[in-house]
Image 1 (cartoon, rainbow, N blue to C red):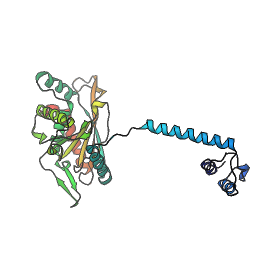
Image 2: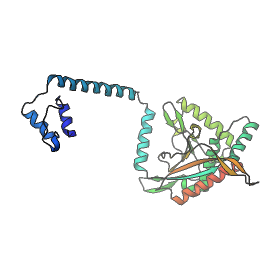
Image 3: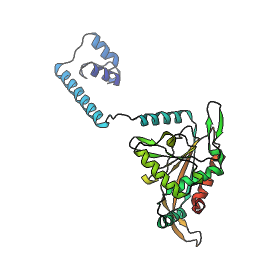
Length: 297
């Protein structure tokens, strides 16, 4: 039986074997069903009941599956704004991507020392924010955005305002560490903790999350190896950071095989505002800071 004929029989509550087929090898065609209906054909009661029973059962199964598949929840204003901005970003900004894997053995060791000797506990992300800010100073071409109205590149200048992605119950929000290139790691850590707390409590002021020249999104704490983030408009780039992974490596001093740790970062950039050479220079500078973390202090 042809699929179209079968569908028409079911929609018309006709038994599947109520029509004689005229197709090759006796296959029932859609035209056979239409002709049968036109002549006033009707299904046998028993088979009609069976078909209806089957349809009812299928309908209930679909309904049950639908109800079990999702739950409708009221949408928050912030989620609506996020949806609009992400749609705007992916549909209007030509994203390009570039990744780099960086050894962070020294960084992890330095972080342990800082946390043991000081009152403020710093995270790997604090070092990443500082390294991003300094790398933007070394490669200011990445600290820019595309001015759609005038169709030209605009630079933020010597100001690294780093937007840091923070997950809240109402959605993702990006509080800003202003002039991060000038701040000590411990100050960045304290500021981020305060901003993140107020973000989750929905107490951020507009100027604390609007603006920024560059974004950092770190999913390493969730066990993500690497990912590509969506640019946060009107910024021109965002750095996505994965988690630390243990890898076999050589000790630079002794040449012995040891267990090292590395992280993969991916730069998403607006290729209208940032060219590939500058993106590569930024990642090289960022990697140099992260591999030699004492330069961040």
